[in-house]
Length: 380
Image (tube, rainbow, N blue to C red; front, side, top):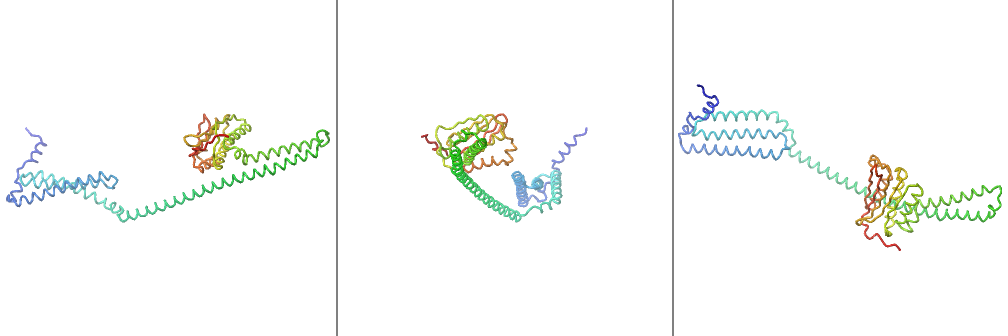
């Protein structure tokens, strides 16, 4: 009855039916232990190398050709096993098993050698340490140059912002000067002309004549001119802002807005005046004016609420309408000079500017200025 071929193969593989190498060494201890010690040390060295390579590959998965390290480690492991078999065969003549181990090692050796041939040009193409060091130096120089450019850009931006602030101040000063001249000189001149005409023509209304209609038209034009002068002067620089402060100026501006547009307007203001410097009060008032102008032009709103309050040490101004809202592409485009102007005014005060937009509830323009503690003072 035939046996199992696999069992027969394994039995023959591990059968020691040959003489061990010790017989070749005449069992001389100095020769035997010389070979044993040398092969053991070689085996330990060979086994430690693959473990180091596996650890290295696990830690550096970014390296190219990492599979080559694995193949080389397997080849070294086979070599170590071959030397271990040399120790075994000194006492046991299992040369079939030793041959199989050498065959496996030979296969790993040939595979590694074949894989190295096409890999060599790619490995040679890898940058050398000198090239990497040079590239690092170039990157460092580029980084320094970029930092210098960014610093210069920041300095330029600060200078532009300072220039913008100075221009805003100069423009407000010029507006105030022109408003005073228009109101004081042109307005007074028109009023004087009207008084003089009234004195020169005392009986115009009492004694109608052929020129009555024309004379009445002259007085009507004078009244319209006086009204226009006052309106232009107020638009340039409302006197209420300088005379009564920001809170009163906001209340006046909202009342004027409601009278001019017919949009229902409400204000929520503090019960005390704000002890703000002229620059801050002017910037907040101009932001309010621009926000109300946008509501009148674009929002199609029927209701506007303006709120000024002190919150957590900050001064907050909010203009909310119930209109159609502003489209996202308009916010993202950055082309609206009005929005840019409001944002820039808020930034120049060290504050924050935001626009909340929902189709259902309209648009909310919000400005928050930090450090408002102590800005409120009691009304006289």
